[in-house]
Length: 283
Ligand code: CA
Figure 1 (tube, rainbow, N blue to C red):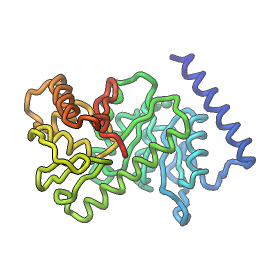
Figure 2 (cartoon, rainbow, N blue to C red):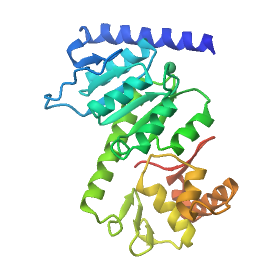
Figure 3 (cartoon, protein in one colour):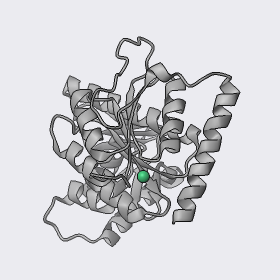
Figure 4 (tube, rainbow, N blue to C red):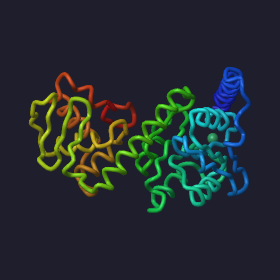
């Protein structure tokens, strides 16, 4: 484990240096505020071309710098910190548009930070992407169940990271506007060839109606409302059957199997994420 961390750090540090060489520029320090011990990090709210603000919570400095450098170059406003309690202070004083949250942190760990953010109505809607060590499926499942919006396993490519950040922010924006207009139920949900009318209990695929059971309809509506988001089996059970019904994980797999069968050629719209759960493909 220690060996893997060293390798990761070295690899990410090398990537940072080559990114700097490639850009031929010094890191734009003015846009990067590091809050190691205080809550006074400066965020440039005045930047009109910003794509949003991201709080990077990562105690390994090389990875923190790589994330910060990459995001800043893409036009995000970035603030960094390396401890859980500083992350909570930062969110409190300068709520970001998104949090990139490492789980293994000194002080309050990442899982606890996520739990606190998601259980506080003031911060619960801020999207959180967890950074996890490879193969920690149990952590991923636990994090998603307390409300994390997505996860990435280290080591990851910076391109993948940027794509995830963009996707989560876009999804969040869409949900916000759906919520604002307050017609969630009347609004058709469309993912590629799939169109769901929640108000009419109607599902069409390539324009053709498909017959779904009530459970299958709830299942596909749940997944299609948040394309790209992974739902754990437990989240699916609670959302479809309620909290106090004894339904096994296996029964979720069976329902997914039936649903995918009815989607026929388009069954790839529903993806299994090994060891974690299911998601609707993002179109
Ligand atoms: Ca860490």
